[in-house]
Image (cartoon, rainbow, N blue to C red; front, side, top):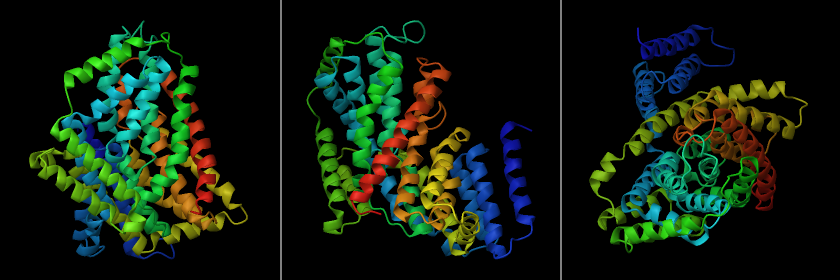
Length: 467
């Protein structure tokens, strides 16, 4: 029996064990049966005996086949507008990558401010920030757009894995990666699991977070975190090279090689600005963010900045639609059958007498550092977000504060380890930073990010009247 078969057998066995356990008092049998399938699904996401999309599809099929919920309910998640917003944003990202606009933006910023290693760190995180709202794959953004630029910079300064890694390569690799985790926390469309957070927050705690609300909530703590992160890493793990006048010349040559902006780049840039304006003003225009995104993708197709085959071949978008739609269906059914409310009441009762801020603080810390056991942001959100939010609200926490705090942490914990999120193996695998150092810096940055996003961020959200 091979490794995947053993993993698959374990997933099935765990599901069956839970299925045949006595149904807890206060729960319907269907709720407990669906919980067994849900736990098996999460375990399948973590162990991956099959790709997560396949695991999700099988789970939905079994749920409907066994008539635990109706076919309409078991397929309801695939019509969730937030998921289609992420699908559209994946196609936006295709435009940035295919036309080269993302690379041009990064080289342009590098050419303007890249005359020192510290400034190069800021150039990389600023480049990431600019393209983050339209790139829901943090791996595509950090790996497909920024990594080739960072790697070229390392070579330009003769900084290679091994003896010369500390010249500048180790600093740029770690700074760019940590910056990517921060930008992923700033916008719904900056990393795919954020859309799952939004949907689960609405289902679990009746907290509705629009694109504009998330962006407004994330902008102040996000900018502060981006402002301090390159400097903190510069002090923790300083590069040997501090002045980098050659970087500006490298950027100039690369832009020269690219030539003037192509028609496709101009279309993508214009559509991106249009989308940002319409997303940011949705509270006034009443335009749905998903419909805005779809229309903008349509404009890119009409203008041939991307082609229909690009849409079909964007596997990340359709994979996300399948697994996230399936999870939304299962999570929605669990809520409808009363399991989430039952669990919140059960745990909330045990927290009687504990202040809500203390309960929330403990939940946030556990949620953050339990990610050492996960190799996927999506799997972690799926496994723990709704349950932790339900408990936090049951303990008296303001619903928005709890939902948003858990939401931003769902991106920030990607910076902890070398396997925590998609871009991590790419940057760690470049060979510039030892594993122990990677973990140490990741832990320090997690503390910094918690203080900024939960401390300063919580105050900012209070000023905005969000809680």
